[in-house]
Length: 305
Image (cartoon, rainbow, N blue to C red; front, side):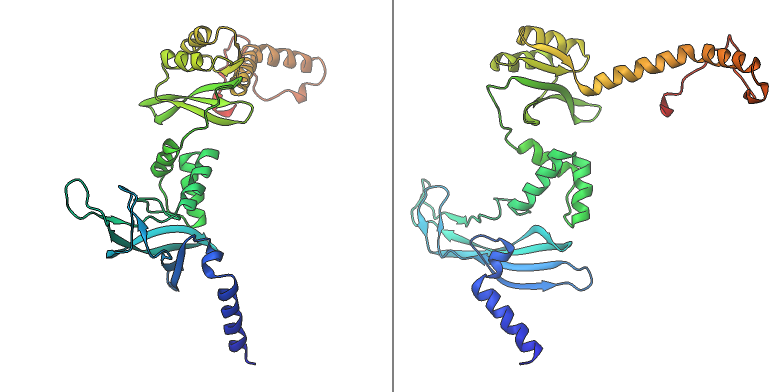
């Protein structure tokens, strides 16, 4: 048997036993054709629904009467780093029951793999969302481009804002800080469950009244990690008077670094002077070429740490 015959036989067995739809993970869709653009390396998949009928989203009636058909361009997860586009053939159905206006109602079939009015599959949006939550909108844009998914940082942020956060009414340890809806112009408040490390609330503003209201609805909070903002501190004291307030790791490190910088800045001249005096009594050749004057105030460059 020739190599081509063996290859055709293997392809036939794979398609018969497994199915390319199962390999690609396209639920309730039938793949009609696949093509590869040799110039760009992009993969194009034509697919259509396996269902012969559709359910009207308004009245819930089942319809088998096809009105028309159109094609949706949907971006999917990349294959071996190649961009994938699904040409999804979508049908319009006639509703069997007249509606309130007495006119025939036409609706489009729904696809499980793709949401309504979406330009990407659900699994692609889920990957973008998880990446944006773990990193940031701009970092997610860069990482997705490396994997062959075109998405902007604005879209990443929109997916994050659309996601329903898992609220925990029994949360006991939280971290609160501000975050930017639009950098330099509009800020909100982010609340994180310290036990799970997940965000449980995104308040639209960073006002003390909003934070106070949220804390009053979650009366079991025992520990709050926060920054040094005075308005936040007053809101915590009123909304959760029994909670212990501690500085978060970032501001603890910032406080320590600032203290060390101040010590070095204040003691730098005296340290150099003492060192020069010690060298003069031992070996003058080890003395640096230029020493700061005792009365000179040395400015510490923060950019160099």
